[in-house]
Image 1 (cartoon, rainbow, N blue to C red):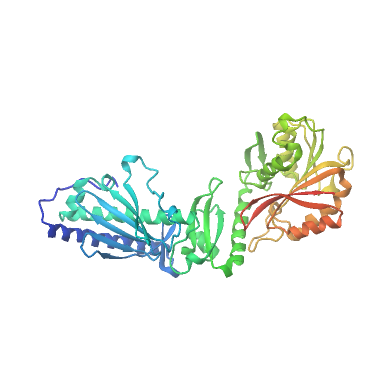
Image 2 (image 1 turned 45 degrees about the horizontal axis):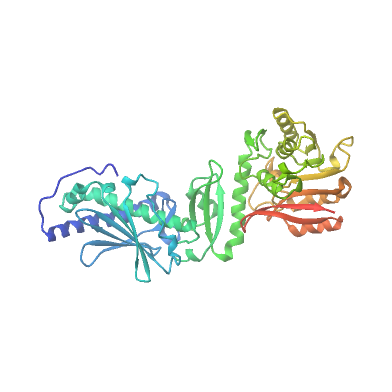
Length: 489
């Protein structure tokens, strides 16, 4: 608000004159709030239900206003049922946000909220939290320097038109900022304030590379009031959203969200990248699974570390396990195989993949990291080389399995879509019967899986081959979670 210049000091004025000029500020402030809302609606042309506009990533309706009975404060009401009381004195401006308990039953979420916490202390307004009986909580923000010094307030209340406009503009910006960030703060805690039925909707989380909320809403076919911007995603260049859907539309929307995320997932793998992974320097070509932060590769390493007996976190106090024969099936760029070999140099570690680009990357990565791991191009177990040492039984087989068995609705076939999709579980149906002849008696397969795949299919295939499938770990949310399964005799 540095453009709010110091200005004229008003001459002595009686109370009625100040009251009249205060009303002028309130009229200008009301116009600012309504016009800003309409301008955003026109900018995005979002003529959909709730007449919502977007400010700071959350939906705000067009407010109504009225001046209080004594003329000292302006009341502002939003369709979300939040309201504000804005008062002006010669020494400060006060914006009080009123939160009804019937909307936010846990007022402990409101009390610590501070949209100015990131600013230096001398630039923040004073914040006060208080209760109005048992029904309302009030967050008061008292402004002095942030909205210009006392001379601006006195000049506006003295009737100077320029200062009236400046003060009204500043108050509109601060009020909108507080309300919008409060709604965002509450939505992160699972409290969704909005017009109509929004508060009764089911939230679905979405992460995408698309940073334009308008385009995401249009792609998903939803009203803008049903999409909440939650901030940056875990990966650089991505954004997180919450999609609000009625309960009866949850499954259909989940498919659209998964399709959008799958498309974005494939786009990430369309360019070559180099990674630092568990102390390894790795390169992945286009179409070869990238071991990025948040990838299933990272999950598998973490889950194995917690569940594979040989990788007990206390291993430094235990004798080194006997050398093992390990196969990283579908090894991609070799990340998991090389990670194991670095941990246990005495182990015989091998990797295979059907994609020649993946094998070329894995071999290059082994050379870069000076690790003796042998890689071969092969289609599952029956495609492995027939000569020693490939044809002996394995103590451990690892498979970072594709996480969908049904192609997400709306996705198109891409040269590398096999990264995420094993349609109908065809690969799994081929692999399980091959396992008994390729494991040692005490050997085991450690398989990454997901809730987007069929657990009953996995169990039934294992039972038919005399094997048992056990879920060891799960990580994620109710809509999508990664899993680690152990398959053994």
